[in-house]
Image 1 (cartoon, one colour):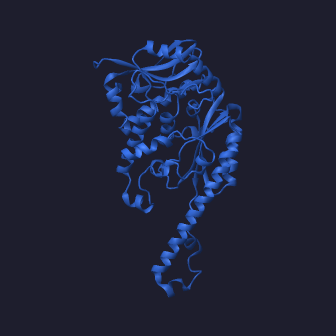
Image 2 (cartoon, rainbow over the protein chains, first blue to last red; image 1 turned 45 degrees about the horizontal axis):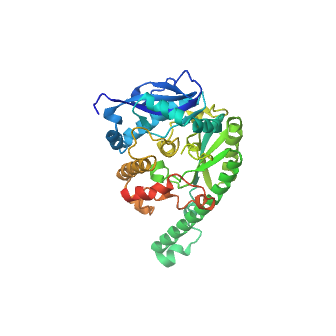
Image 3 (tube, each protein chain N blue to C red; image 1 turned 180 degrees about the vertical axis):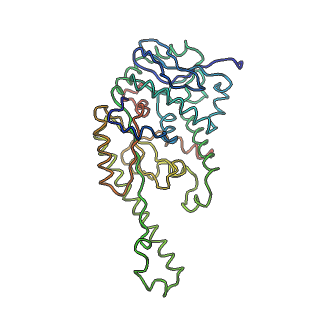
Length: 267
Length: 105
């Protein structure tokens, strides 16, 4: 494969004939997005070069977090621009074809599946809800520790420290248990307002940069006309369940509601 | 995706990379293109998680990690502690691949 070879990166498949393919969002590698039409569907694609996106290069680059971040953000930017205007089914990162013909063939071959997925996500958006266990209060610090005056005198500061440390660990475990119970309730309550719900594994504190441990990482497919109601419910639940801190993200293109087609379609 | 009722103050915020990777690596349509990486989805996720683990391990101070009893950055993320996953029988897309990712890590 020579260095001039171009590959076709697929961002999304949209219904009908979107004129503004990808809008002004700079695509991967900075190149513009364009449209390939077949079977009444439009694939939003971009041209990417062999040096970075050939099989070996892609494999290598996926190991590079900076490259991965840049690429994921560019992929998302184009999808978001399209999905803001038309129902669009996002493709998983790194769906790459050798030619436009290959993409058109894929559209024709999978047209039924795409239509099914498009009708499922039409006029709906994805919302993310994460819950973190609230950090328990260190009772000794909070109450001034002086309440038990004999603490330090009889057993020494070491024992007091250990006792305090143990109490904190217990409190933390209790807080986590309570947070997980709240997360169950939150998850179920919000599921009632959504068309469909999906659970991701909780993210590691090392990746989130949040010291609090995540007890819920959910995605919901919500009808657009119920978006307000959904957001209000998150606020209500946050006020009701003090053992968790809730974070709402979105609206997202419906990334999380494509693969689990009930018809077994796209997957 | 019309974003009705959406708070623009939040929208302006930069999307967290972790949230984005959850979605672009584990969500979306999986179609075998011409560059297959001999994957479909599984290896790609594995590869990327390995990337994250490696990068994060390099950044994280070990004392903190030890104090929290976390062996690998993935420990928390493996879903073992989520009652939701088990009790509701809902499959999490990453669960299957994380064993593999850990082996590589």
